[in-house]
Amino acid sequence: MMLVCPECLEGKFSWVVEQVQFGAVYELENGGYTEETWKNGDIVGDDIADNGVFCCRCMEARAHEDLVPTNGATDDAAVGAE
Image 1 (cartoon, rainbow, N blue to C red):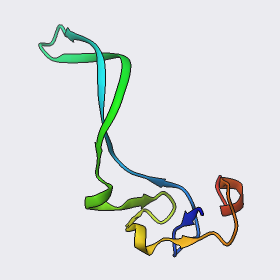
Image 2 (image 1 turned 90 degrees about the horizontal axis):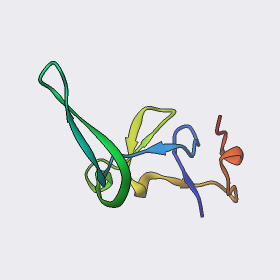
Image 3 (image 1 turned 45 degrees about the vertical axis):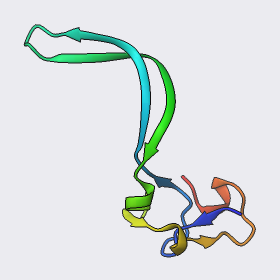
Image 4 (image 1 turned 90 degrees about the vertical axis):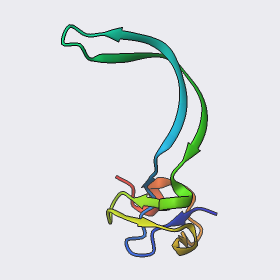
């Protein structure tokens, strides 16, 4: 069952993940560094337990327990996604 924000009934959320990445490291002319990702690895963590999920419409964090069912909607179009 898909869950949505209790305030706006939107089903689009964001959260931060920690992911292993493989690639190369370059030194820049200004003395800084940059990394180029060649391949993404496993996701090894996220911030959901600490911050919940972030409603992309209300711009507020929501705990899983605060989300509500979509009343049978199962895709983004059914919950007002843009």
